Amino acid sequence: MAELKQQIKIMLAKCLKCNRKVFLMAGILILIICLIFLGNILWQSINDTRLIASLQQQVATQVVDMKMWQEIKKEVELKKQPPAANEKLTRNPFE
Image (cartoon, rainbow, N blue to C red):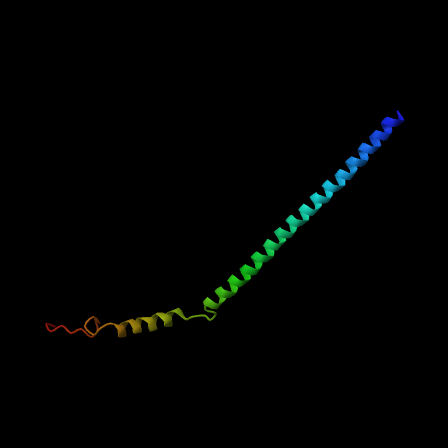
C-alpha cells in the first residue's frame, strides 16, 4: 500500500511537471498571438494615417463658389470655341 502511494505521488509529480510545461508553452503561444495581433493593428493604423495624409494633400481645403466657378468655366469654354461655332458671333446673311 505504501508502495502504491509512492508510485501515485511520483506519477502526479511527473504529470504536474508536464502540466507546467504545457501551461508555459500555451502561455507563450497566447502571448505571441497577442503581440502579432497588436502589431498588425498598429501597422494598419500607421498605414491608415499615411493614406489620410496623402488624401488630404489631394483635396481642396478652401470652399469654392460654384456659381462663379460655372460662369468662369462657361466663359473659358466660349473662348476656346472657334468663332464660327460660337452662336453669338455667327451671322445669318438671310436675316
